[in-house]
Length: 176
Image 1 (cartoon, one colour):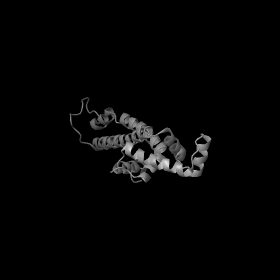
Image 2 (image 1 turned 135 degrees about the vertical axis):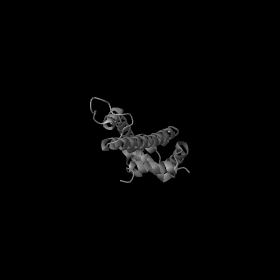
Image 3 (image 1 turned 90 degrees about the vertical axis):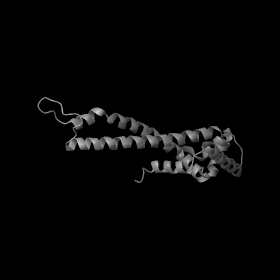
Image 4 (image 1 turned 45 degrees about the vertical axis):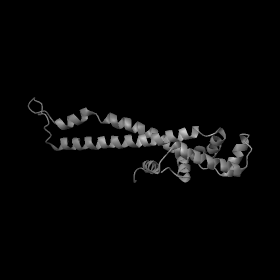
């Protein structure tokens, strides 16, 4: 099931923040992957060399090695979850941007004025901005165009309710 108009409006208002969060998470993912260096784990797992020899293969017997193995597993899980989150956010951003491209210039203009900088601009201010842009339509006509644009975006972006809920969970920090 696709998202409803109110959810689409919320995504449009949140688009700047979602975009920044996605970019930040991509950088975090790169850092996390770089930190997950095999040398760190193998140094922890092998432990000190005794008597000039190397420890036996697969000999993970001390507490440090167990901690390293647990950390390695947790790190892999963190990377996988972060990859899923980044993919979800990128897909929603791409869907919204693709949907916006299907709108007419007038529809994009009205949406742009309505959600400038992620804030919901009052309709009377939208009308003022439209007049400055030499678009002379009534507030009620602008609202009709806006509502049609939202419906068209929902159809074009194809964002499911489940995906919307996932994005909201990511943006809220997964239960913080």
